[in-house]
Image 1: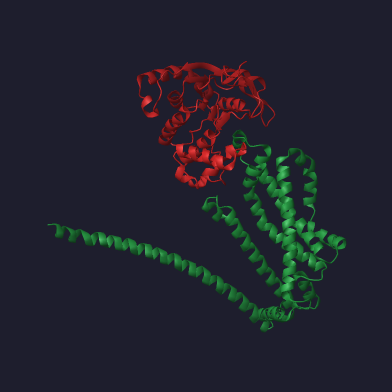
Image 2 (image 1 turned 30 degrees about the horizontal axis):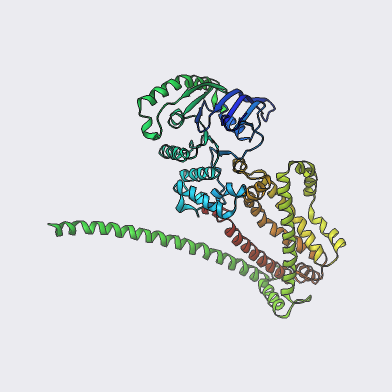
Length: 271
Length: 293
């Protein structure tokens, strides 16, 4: 298969099972088929603890599937590839490094000379609006600013594939809307394919071209919805449009059922 | 009539500001007073205890031959400092003990950190060596001091060796634990960013284990001093431990106490130096967290 024409990400009949500490086998993802086209922004929504995050770790190469195949740019995933960027739910910045040094970490790990890495890091810090904070340590920043550092540290590597695991869920509502807009702006120039995991349906519609609804765990694709809202979008205004509300209602009728199932199982301990 | 309105409101606001200012001042004064009270009581307590000791010994309530008295201890210290000890100058004794403790500490720390990180990162090593390290740790290691004396003789080497075995284990266990408890997200993130396994060890695991290691450094310097002193006490040609055992051998209680006071001062100075270094090294930590220790 030609790596230029093949989709950015393809999962074919992928399953992933973990051994729990008690020795039982827990299936997080079952028989998952999913295709992400190049430059596409895909949001994955599902009830909490259904296995959405596991899907991301499979694509990133942090974990290997128990069954099935994971292809990135037509190539099967073996270990962690250099095309992938990952933004985690929790803060994953290095607390002992300054902001600038945090953003330089990726290029430096990959053997980029120091001067060039610094230049590229400064450029991305400027883009996320933290140019004047480069000497600060992470503990001196707010939650939103730390997230911006994480975004800059990810984008500085020029990822072709951007995996995001509920990246904004720890932020307050206003900061969240702001960060979503910022993410769309940062992404628009890169042509990267994005898989954005969230349990917030509004966020997913506002951001994505395609919303994938997962079933209650073990996760598999239930339905896929195209979001035909025009770009560029502003998160705060797009969600007031009639078409947005229409799409929301349509997807919720599918997602709501899975949420109910999870709740009935006692999702508290699954999360 | 603007002038009148200002005259009516101004005194009120000024009075408010004045009371607020006075309150801040009063609060500052109270904080100062509290500090003075704490320090004052501390000094009084020390003077009281020393005075009590001196008084009881002079009144022969406690036997001054066995228990000595502060004035005698002070005399002993000044005499050592000015005229030298039976084994040579006092500074030489201090330097010997400090040298043995420091050398043993450095070797023990390096060994403990390297092995701790290695075992924390390499599962195979941890599985193979784990039980042996547990057995060695269970041994009361101070009993090794006589063996080291036989192996390495009366010189500094035997004291360094006993300091090393005392220092190694606490540092090792902390480094091991520190390497094990690194934030998984941080490791996953650095691997995604492109770090090799060596880069993860050097740039992620070691920095995050440093706060674990540092807590053990404080304790372990004390252990190094113990190792050196006990080693000297058992058999040596120089050092503060020898001073203790020589004073004991001549029934010079004041000498034993004097050596103890000198040791305490040395240990406190070393501890202060370590705290200073730690402050420099952990600039990235939130200030309140490091103040908690």
